[in-house]
Length: 230
Image (spheres, rainbow, N blue to C red):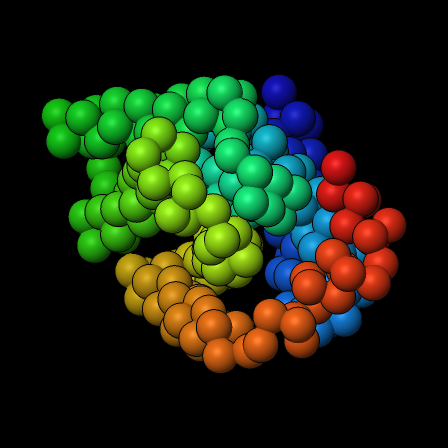
């Protein structure tokens, strides 16, 4: 069991560190569709490994409220951010809604457990993370059931928000682990930086003519690249 624990930690840390690098590459190539798609896909692969190994650690070795919240948030927004760019203006499927509901219910149940005093936790860290998770899941449900026609053109903004949120989760977990002496600031500051980046890139994207965006080029000039998402 100790060998499995060590292997899980090494895999989790290695792929998490690699994911931070690949996420920066994807962001750096945001205006070059081929490279952005390639490195974005690699980031999602590493994120999947990070989420799976985190759940293994939580279930079998160590329960951490902060780690669980980041795992739920990072895993969900990574999946949902990928689905946003794959579906584009099409409505989410029953499978998407089911995953959203499962994550929302799981986070609510865990919050009740925290408030019951079963686990030591820091409200300054867990509440913002849980709020971000409920915000994005709530938005996805509202969009699916009530405001799909009004919000369907926001898919690119959703992609920006969700993928940067996934990166923020990995970065917060990394800094919180590497710099434990600075908690909770080592966990909070990465989120502040990434939220600032989200606002910057969404604002920048909103000011660009649609014809000049990388994704519009995918749609009009090179449909084969877009088909790789499907």
